[in-house]
Length: 357
Image 1 (cartoon, helix red, strand yellow):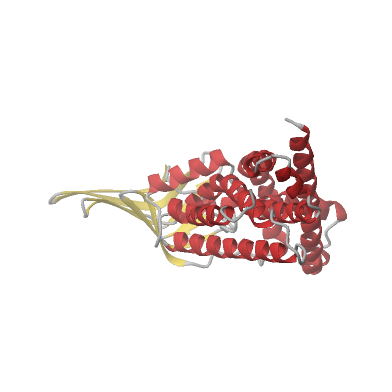
Image 2 (cartoon, rainbow, N blue to C red; image 1 turned 180 degrees about the vertical axis):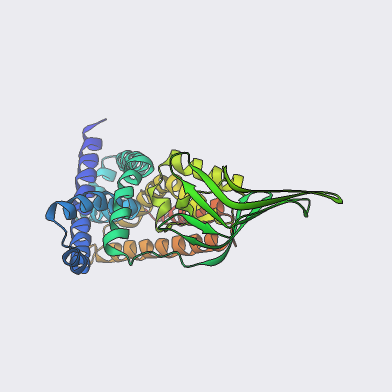
């Protein structure tokens, strides 16, 4: 790379980490202020709180990475434009596309790091962060549902009258297997108990009916261990569970939900697609930020900065709307998550036409 590339790239990366540091500092101070009462109530040590924030800080940094890049580009480029550095570059025969190159290199470096950390490092940290929040910040979790119906396989339904998360015991379980809309197998028991050593369910006082046309085979017993596609964690709090899964774990869990024929798969598919689209969002927002702020304004850089923040706000609104639509099932997750990037790519191309060459 040439001197110009190094000059812009170093300025870009330094500005990015400075913006991240400032935003993180503000967020952490606000969060500590909000949660200080909980920390005092549970008599947490400074070490416990520090360990929590060591996981919390990367989580926030990963979540705001695309918008942080956008803010960085707008501020940095506005300064270059006001100091007439952009004009000087263009006047010396450097094209706008050439100026854009170190920006895209910097954005690509951050995007690759964000993808790696967001796919593997941060989720592992989130395991401890979420566990801490469930124990010390969130209200105590109690599974109070009754008459529970779960699809644990494409043709198998599980009914439970109730479930105790403390003892991992389900009461009055019924398993029904349907084929082509016809009941072929019905299993009932008084209770099902999780056996941690064997990772199986122990059925107590069970009876089973196998139906074959007009014939019925009846069997019963006092105790029987069996494997089901369900785990005690399925009855635990699902608070931010998708954030605690690495990419490999996320794929495995989605496959497990599909195999069970579960209906709540969208939230995990959305998370998967977000992790892939975020690096592209960083590149798109870098392109828009550079196009918005490259022109020198007579009244200063305030208008470009305000326009940049307006576009960032609109992007967030689009993202939230698309995610909500995907979770509601009205739009396919992969389409919903890509919509903001597609729209803002078009906006970026329109703005690019106004950039001085």
